[in-house]
Image (cartoon, rainbow, N blue to C red; front, side, top):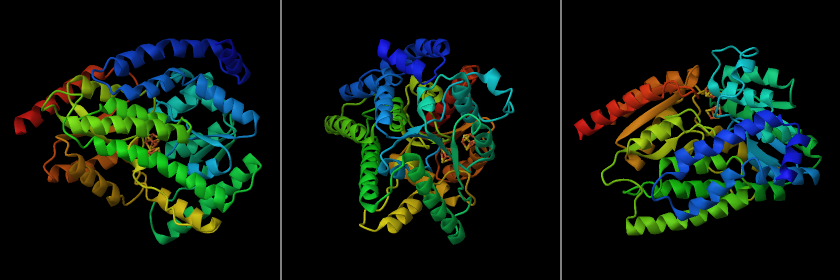
Length: 426
Ligand code: SF4
Ligand code: SF4
């Protein structure tokens, strides 16, 4: 304990504020995650990981950093982690999922900035995120306007590299993105002091693909009735995927999937027979943003899939593993990342089609569309998602919320009314 406290001090954490954060997290985790019934035994690894999220993993990253490995923070699923790994570095997700130092943040950012951006800036201003403090570089992308302008301010605090993400998927946009991926690779070569080569990059592609395949395997077992794992546990795993060492994470997740596949064979469920199956769609849910899943599953329903960046958008597509030279590999990486269907794209028919496809595969009784307040891309796209989903006869509820708890009872009432509508239509 003393060693880790020394490390926190050394990397510049605000010890008092950080202690305060660590005091509240275990209680929340206990209530939301640990107290669930019939959890698979192999969730123990992920519980352990979470309990040491500011301890063991930080110590690992710091020790690798001493040996020359760079730590790179990302805010978005468009950042090609394969390139970071191929250059011996670690890629960490920095999106914030809790209200931190809001007063300080709102002295700089407008109050009507989305909670995810405010949260991540709050963690930086308050110096309570050891991952942020370890970063050699933070990678931004030109997705929504809030993020773009935030990165300009963030660069006063930490080195930032912004990738220009096109907003259309035409050939000229693809060309721009291929160049951006190369610029990022060149930047990473500078930061790491190493040279990218095809062998290391194709190995990193395999490592990340295996991680995504394991997440996809987890998603597959969630098609089973009864559900063999809760949505909250599944979301937790997706969130941890942005922090853990990828090879270890993949191995542990595959062990969990072995257990879950046995549960499917035996019909061992986590929920009551006939409980509602819900699909989530919308904005990413970063740790510890479990408010909506906790409300939904607290009412006896089970979330069976998340069309989120902490869900299908992160793991559905993989990079081609065809052998190739460095240029061909970089093109394959660019192609895979541009296939992500974030709401910042226009037109974004692909996402609407994907929502319908996922609904067909996971057979939810209803879809709850989640958007963060002040997130125009996802809040506006809710209209087209609703139209498409309802045309397939699936009930749809749009919940717009933030990271506070003030609206929890209102959301509970809306979710309850939604469940009654679903049950009435069955
Ligand atoms: S929602 Fe869009 S901008 Fe946000 S993390 Fe996902 S891909 Fe990136
Ligand atoms: S949630 Fe919406 S507004 Fe917030 S960073 Fe993501 S795309 Fe931008």
